[in-house]
Amino acid sequence: MDLSVTATLTALELKGLTKCFDRPAVDGLELTIRAGEFYALLGPNGAGKTTTLRIVAGLLRPDSGSVSVFGIDALKNPIEAKRLIAWVSDEPMIYEKLTPFEYLEFVAGLWSIDAATAEARARDLIEWLGLGPHAHERCQGFSRGMRQKVALAGAMVHEPRLLILDEPTAGVDVELRRGMWDFL
Image 1 (cartoon, rainbow, N blue to C red):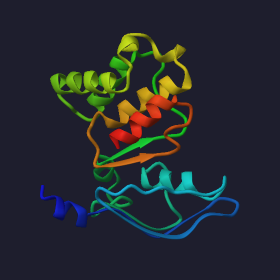
Image 2 (image 1 turned 90 degrees about the vertical axis):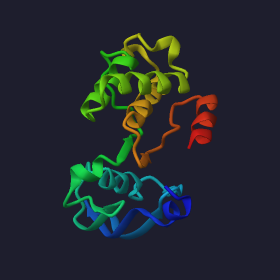
Image 3 (image 1 turned 180 degrees about the vertical axis):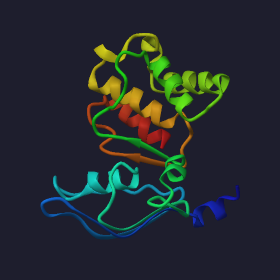
């Protein structure tokens, strides 16, 4: 695709996004992010950052407002929107009884990726994240940083167009942090 066209595509658009719990967590948020852009939500604890990201990822419904992912109404067509999104939470969510390689093949299967492609992507992601020596060990004994690496690989296996990272470097070593930023 022509890069000049890609730069004009809207990857994510939030209009009037609102979510209340006991009090407003997100209050009328307006945000537009173009394809290829990096955007960070910064603020103190309780400012609504994770709530916003969970809404975008389709894990939480807003009280009002709209979410558009590459032109798809994510509230009306959540499955179609989720096909374009990868979510990595601040707390790694993986199946700890599986090895990293098994986990990536499992996640690839959820996305209906054929076995040969899944295996190739799993090997590439495991290599990139430095998980090679641990590719066939159960994840249950992994440190938080290692589990975060596996979760990131799982999010990337279907080659998403929109990557949502909630505190992605929490618990990861400096070398991986630098590698993640270089990759992004």
